[in-house]
Image (cartoon, rainbow, N blue to C red; front, side, top):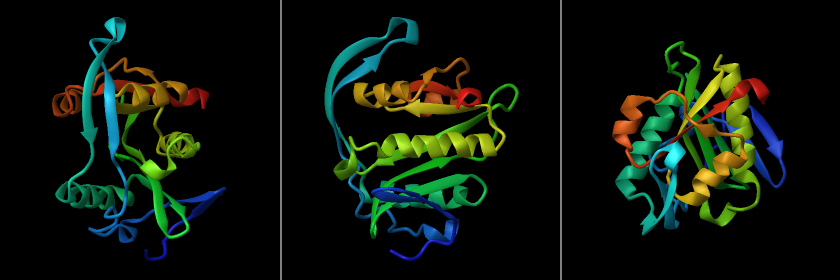
Length: 190
């Protein structure tokens, strides 16, 4: 992996760095283990949330990885993209879109927060979320908008980070991912 062009945040046992577009090439995610075995998901509205048995494997195909790399590179300089490194290996990454959202422009969207399967359960996701909260505030946001995978583990992670059901819905995102759980994080208390 090539050296990073931007600032470094040290957090043992990994190093989290903010990336520039130059840090992300088309093969950046080739070795990343995204695979998630899903057995239970949330369905319904926030006030009528139900757990439903739905078994599937969530992973990215090679083409999806390439497209995501292009999207991350495109938002890295104007937005925020971080990589958590374990030596030369990518352990996790997160990204916030630069575009203001919501009626008053108070939101920024958390576009990605991914932890490699080999690193899950060690606190890396929480550390990446802290970076996203600080990054969102630095971008002038009052809230992060999160379109969370509906797997109960994923929604529970965001809830433990202080996220709640979204008060405002970003309709294009809801149409793109109709089964996602729409959440938000108030940055004023972070």
